[in-house]
Length: 301
Length: 150
Image (cartoon, rainbow over all chains, first blue to last red; front, top):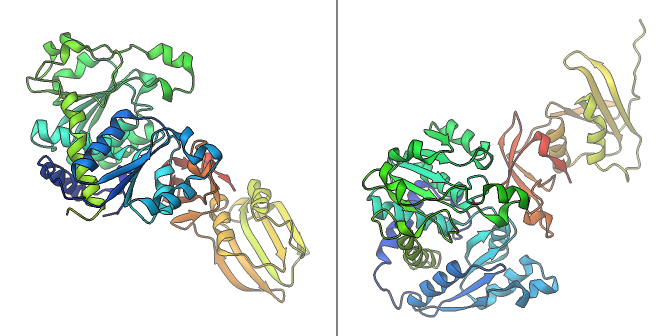
């Protein structure tokens, strides 16, 4: 397997299984596993949850963390290239985590750096650690990844978590239900690819029409920041508002995931139902990121 | 009828044949021939048995590099490249699209790192006809219509 975690597309089904297996082991404490190792966090754009969970993961394995979370305090502000930043930071760390607003940045940093690089989001492209914790959550709450009917709801056009998750789930004979207003449906290239692989999928804008078929419902926020046109955003803001009415039309053990943060697409009244697993999902970021840190540093197989 | 050459022969150099007529000038452009000292001829709308109308480019005193041949393949996948020595064809090459195209195409994603930093572009060729390529960095998929050459 690649020593870097850049894109979910780099991983085979076996790689994914292996990461999930290590993540399960990481539910238990391993306080000295990464003792003497340093993680550098290069956050060129803010992300509280991802950054905190990486810091927590590294420190709970006995490692140290340094870095920045605001590009204006880094030398990028002075015009330094990402390539040079990666070349310099590699001298201070054993592994680096990078979040950057430009697509392809993590791949470039990985090529520049002699130390492993973990992508914590490169613009609208990839966020593989999110995808892995999504998979981990599905596996943990449904006891399997195979043959599930998975609904993905919200902004399917711009949502990178959705695109990556669809890629990852394509290994597991998933039936997909893409639930979105027509203008925010899955891009055709993804649908073509599923067709080519013979994977079953349905597109729909009305959740109620398909909700009873679902084993998993993955809800996403309509992301204001990804819309090229703010007028377009206003049109779709608040398009879906899920509340306990949904529960009348679903399977008993259907699970609801959400990468968070949520805005108004999912009412708090759902939080205390057995279906809501999104807070558990966020917490699963810890064992998954611990697993990835241990893996790229050669401390887990 | 007397057979006439519509484009003059060269003694040494490269002749690129079977270019789609409409792309002859584009091929000339991407080869960056400004500094070539030898004679250069670009001909378009020539009649051709196989392709109705075709274009030909002849470049005196220049042999093409692999990179340049790759660029031709993106625009003119059926072109032939003839290396000329002493007025005769010494070597005939079919252009072939490689599996990976380096330093020839610009990524159509304006937010791709290759458009923001000094980074060489790399594309993997997913499909040759119709052409479909994928940016190694931002993973954007591009078809023939999205491609601009560097």
